Length: 321
Image (cartoon, rainbow, N blue to C red; front, side, top):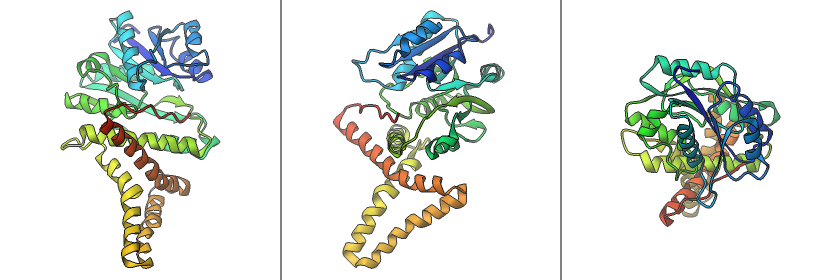
């Protein structure tokens, strides 16, 4: 790939065989590949070196975030390959689908107004658990120009550098926040109708799903805190929904029962009615149930963010694997 030279930045921590699949999917076509390891104890960094990737071992004495890992990877990539102008970011638990790199590169070549292009992330084994299946459904987002991308995306290195890269203090939601700043500089983001990566969530327990929902709530709260003012209103609606269903409605129902008696418990009927609305929209009883339960996890994540913010510290990453 000579025109619009492409590089790859992969990040991971204890991904094992998932990382092997990830690197196998890119190294044969993109030699300029950097893998950033975040304190793996399973030999992932040694394996990546043996496979031919440039490896960066993060200094884990500093607070770790995926945003910091991506910035470090970009820095090393451009240091070793200064002529790289397109960068494919990929998480170490994802495998890039054949044909994606060429399609994404061609799109950015033909659309100079766009800084980011992404495609369809699919779950490798959606049949193995309801949690995997919900991940696959979550990533089925609309095609065309969009507000943001996820962790897997191809970006222009010049655009990234112009906005200062990822916000390293964010422990979740760093990609949409980056896209806000890119759009403020008049760049555009696009999602192609093409499969991009296979993701291996490997979620088999409720506790894993709960932590993932807590992580989402933290991202919503921080995104709204940073960019919630008009006209952006970034993740304000998502954050408000978490507070409404996870805190305000339960407390209002309890207060009404104390003040007006047991009949006030009818306020709680809002939950089954909301479940019915979600079911009529998505047709899945499981998804509707978990979406409703997830608001309690999300508001817990929002509380964690605001407590850390008031203390003036960056909270630890929320790992769900």
